[in-house]
Image (cartoon, rainbow, N blue to C red; front, side, top):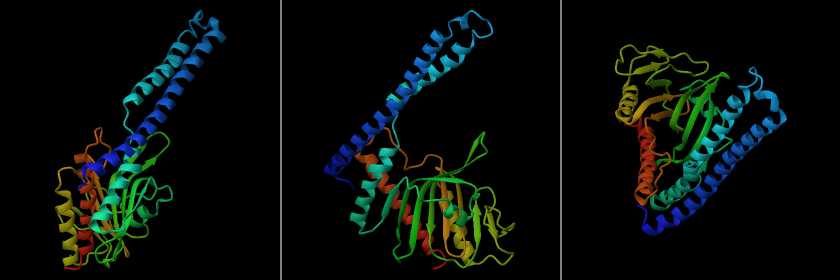
Length: 294
């Protein structure tokens, strides 16, 4: 738990970052509003006869008015807008420092990591390999028995140029250990493992479960299914995707309301709630790592 003095120190740093981000956003929308207004006024002086012709009368009020209105609305919204960046850049960083100190861990935290590409998504085969991946939060470390893990708070999307589809927006776990099997358990969709064809197991009726062949469902499979059902039972969870390859176990959890997103009012209780969420994620990793051992 955070002390009052710790909270006040972090909150001061957080507020400075929040003010800087808010100022940047207001400047952007303020510039858009002023430029659109000046351009619209300029067109009035450059083409004074446009309002005398019925064919051109509607152009400036429609397009110019829309541009000015968009800029004005954007600026008004930016005044009250709460940026997510101070949460990931400052608040969450300090929380992980507290977790490392209190639990004796060596977690590595990075916000908005740009060098993380599509590789972990392709390796997991839970979603199409064509996804663009944006990582907000990346945490790496080791479990109690020194198994490497990664946590990605990320969003995966594809676009056809006209519309964008979100395939996943949530917390993506990777435990770097082999279960010596390739399986998937999913809320919806089908496996996307490159070069592998998995078969839907019809005898498993309570979830979509896929294996490499029609081999008998063994104790390891049952542990995977039991773990999956334990996760999906949470009413705040929208969907869950879990799979293994030869070297890793992947778990993707999509929340209805993600517990690690920005909060309009940051208090010591909110700070401790975030800390509880991150520690709960570490417990999930331990549970994943225990599959196949018991």
